Length: 224
Image 1: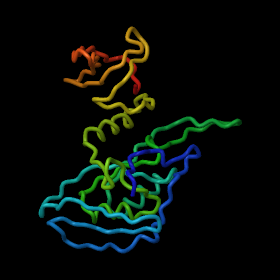
Image 2 (image 1 turned 30 degrees about the vertical axis):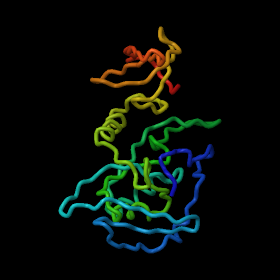
Image 3 (image 1 turned 90 degrees about the horizontal axis):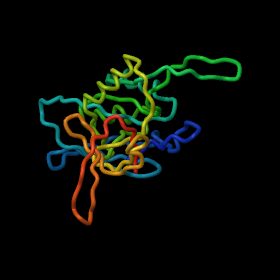
Image 4 (image 1 turned 30 degrees about the horizontal axis):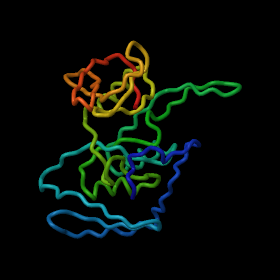
């Protein structure tokens, strides 16, 4: 399975552009190897293998993960996972949808094609999720999914609970090259750095191997 962190699996029509024939997923085959657990799966499109680190007996730590679904199937996937005993979180917001003759308040997922699940990172728990219809996989840098810190989930909960105003913003991360939009620093480019709750822009003159930093809290940024 390809890296599922990219959200372009939903096209402009809101439909997923990849399909997986889950009816042809083979039965789980388990065997021990080097103290870990492996699982081999095959589909009509490709064969792939999941592997995870051995889980220490007696531990039951849980992590949050994002799960990618077909467009407009987030709720039904969440319901089916709940029936399997999987803890889920589907943040939703209310939007005004307008038609030529009317308008209506509609509750929609905050992140289209995604919902969150909390589980112990074992193959057995992952398969509870992957075997549900309309699930495409875990989002992240690997096929196993990337754990999401609790504080990030809590931040989303607060935004939804308090109905705070928000708008979609390009994803920026510390260490990324960015450009300032507007204000006295319009057009300035540098590396985004976070330190002690403040955002700064590091400007470098490579030939001289010298750098300067300027605080940019309050400025609009975009990827350079």
